Length: 60
Image (cartoon, rainbow, N blue to C red; front, side):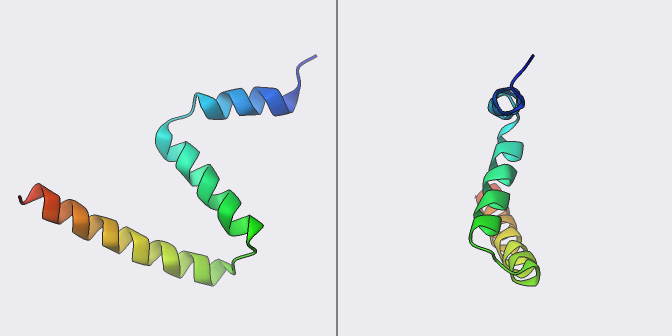
């Protein structure tokens, strides 16, 4: 019999970095009880910022 917690922890350890980060962000938002609309708005702001930085670094 397998411990589902340890098998899911192992799966997360082996997951791609973007999945690990997504899980961390979801945990952060849920543990702080952030309103869904607020979280989505903040994610849009972060995405815009990152895309701007990416464009600036690729034009250097």
